[in-house]
Amino acid sequence: MTQAEQEITAAVRQRYGNIAEQVVAGNANTCCGGDVSLSGNTISTNLYQVDELEGLPLKATLASLGCGNPTALAALHPGEVVLDLGSGGGIDVLLSARRVGPTGLAYGLDMTDAMLELAHQNAAEAGVENVRWLKGDIANIPLPDNSVDVIISNCVINLAADKQPVFNEALRVLKPGGRFAVADVVIHGGLPAAFPDTNAFRRVSPRGRAALQAHSPMRSIARAWRRRASPRSS
Ligand SMILES: C[S@@+](CC[C@H](N)C(=O)[O-])C[C@H]1O[C@@H](n2cnc3c(N)ncnc32)[C@H](O)[C@@H]1O
Image 1 (cartoon, protein in one colour):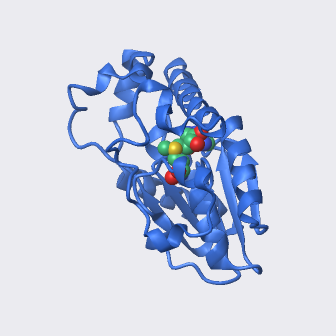
Image 2 (cartoon, rainbow, N blue to C red; image 1 turned 60 degrees about the horizontal axis):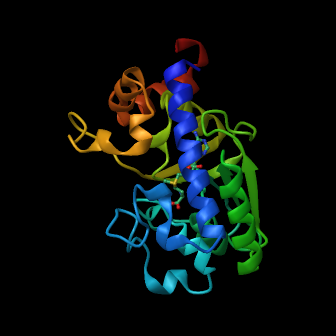
């Protein structure tokens, strides 16, 4: 990892670690390190149908930090294995676990200890057993090749310092015919002028900022696809 990539990863881990600690401590209204309030008008509000959230712990919904509802994009079937890249407090893993049922399994992968702790608590409180929490980086998924039916991700790939390895890894662990449902944000053109004013962004060096802006997801997926089809061509 380059220094710029390490800076981005460290800033992301610190930010989401702080959020998880605030939610666990019951301070959700003041969460997000002062940069963004979960209770305010952010892209993370109103993503789910009210009846979908029934029976989920309040802390799972308070720690919902996505920008879409990937489980609504992917048709999940009983018995399937699902992997959520950057699972946070676990809301999408818990929703997936319900849909794949007791014969299926939902994995949540996250790199932040406090988020994983929160996810463990939420699953226990919800009484959901067909889930597994994995600690690790989405650029180095701790699962074997061809082991997952569906990958979901909710507003996480944009946080990866280098996005190509994330797509390579996703295609490696997906079974042939597997599905990939992602909700995320992509910037066309430059970042908005106000963006560098956030604390997290100020901690990232100019090279890191350039890396954040230079991403074309469809090209990355195409490259990952070619790599899977012919590993020596990339
Ligand atoms: C924006 S939150 C989204 C959480 C969850 N998907 C949701 O919708 O509530 C980002 C999460 O991804 C995790 N994350 C960010 N970059 C990661 C990486 N490279 N590897 C693993 N987890 C990562 C963070 O720790 C955090 O929990």
